Image (cartoon, rainbow, N blue to C red; front, top):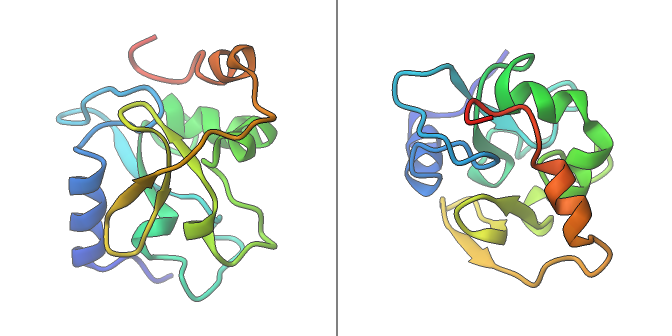
Length: 135
């Protein structure tokens, strides 16, 4: 299986400031991983691009990474998972603890965007409970 290039990993690590984008926990010395928003089981040409990768604490079964995979519907609403039918994750807004709603690009940058109008504050708060190492 292919993996992201070292340069792409560096861009993602810098962009996300070595923090979990969901809970904000620093990732130095804890279990963490680069999460593919568009799942690796549904490969597409941009699978390992910076717009498709974010830092999450935990593994695919623990921490925020585990929460994202265990709550797929909610994670799609937050942009943490991108539909298998969408080959353009850079066009899908994502919520991050540090920056709020943004779009990610393949150069390792982000652009702030208007929050989705169909997502309530209560739903946002519910999607942020559990999963992280911060509690």
